[in-house]
Length: 420
Image 1 (cartoon, rainbow, N blue to C red):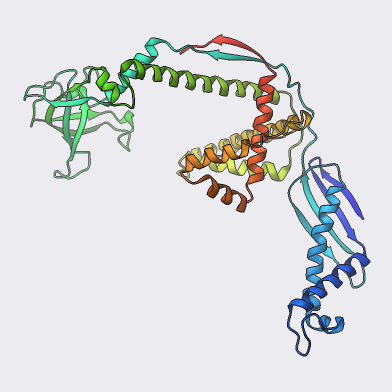
Image 2 (tube, one colour; image 1 turned 120 degrees about the vertical axis):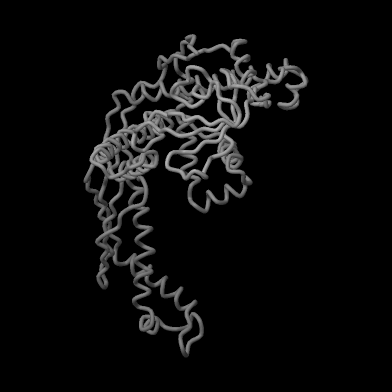
């Protein structure tokens, strides 16, 4: 017998009763197992009478019978209900009087009642950003700079555009605690840095420079004044972007083939960016106006996770300002968690409404992708996921992605030229 009480729109309390005769059957079965597996003086395995088994194993037998029947009764009770249970139940008030029924309570969280918004034919905008020759030129220039050489110049005064190899003595260090071998650019007008203050300095000469406290280099916020010693003046020389240089970046026949690959890489990157933007637009539309209760425990867990992530990104010194910032972090964590959890239920409901199924290869492909990222064998990762019980969560994430893909497939998408 099962009675159900609503304690929250997303929470139910089940009062479950297992009849006395069912419990006696379970107890009989448990005693049979104990008789076959436990050694009892004077009896062969499986031959001891019930009264003897009760003498030795009464407490153990009742505990096993309760455990066995409790789990089955809960599963049967939930199976008879129309709601979808989330997570494990909270079992309480377990009672089995001698000769009576087993009774207990099972509190469960359930999926909320989701009224789906209009999710077909959403109006979305896709940013289209063609790949220009100037985009390729910028990448080529960046690759040239990565292969730059710094050639030592004959001794002379440092000039704008030079690079300098210097030693410096940070504030507060002893006179013999110089930091050696820093390479910096000599740039006129760089008044907030060090390089612009070294113009005219020659090798082996020392000059005091000032680094403004606004740069955050000084804990006190005051300007930092310290000596810099010029060791060498260098010129940065970039390699020619010729075919031989291009072959140094991979199996390319020359510059044209390298540029072709760069074009494809940029196009793919922008395609993925446009796709992410479409997904973001779709999710915002789905969330707009979607107001339904959320399971308290599931929300609390997600809030805790988000808050922990946000705290890892910040440093706290225990000041009043930090406490105020902590309250804002908590608010931000709750807002993010509510949005994420609401979207999870919306996408699950879309998947059910459209009877979307997971491609049989999708799970294996995703495990292979994760394995490549972690540098392990796919079979080994799959075994670990199965042992940790994470396969259902992975399936759920993939089916939700399938639902989002469906929404975008059905959308009315207008291409718009984006800005760089």
